[in-house]
Image (cartoon, rainbow, N blue to C red):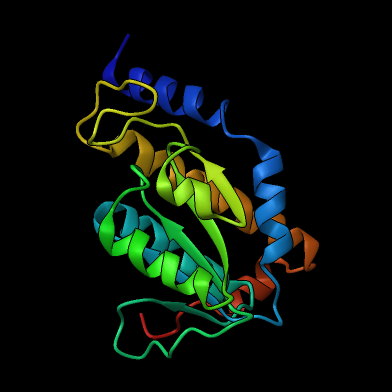
Length: 180
């Protein structure tokens, strides 16, 4: 088996384990009348930023925590936090604070029983290997399998949202950057 086939097989295995009912629970929390905030660190943070961009393309008011133009998060907002281990302090601590302040939390992690997984109003488990060794084992380094699978999982969630909200590809394209 080629390396490409092995990697695709790993991603396919993880995606087969993602519970679509968890995506549906997250979909119910994400509403165009609410501001959506995104949080993640490192490579998980990069996957989260990709999700933020896709939400913007389909008409959501979305902010990435840590960016200079991000306003304060408030009761009634939604926070989507991504951490493979579910223990990353720079993700977990602000997520706890936001939840305590009345923010709805969508947790994306490799382990439902992780601290982040436990506090989510909706938790999406993406059981790809992480740098700590949890999740489906992988030939790939660090959290690559988790990152790849989170990217696909959050893209599926965006597709669900776009279908629910009747957003066409042309509408999404109209919101795409024209400064390239």
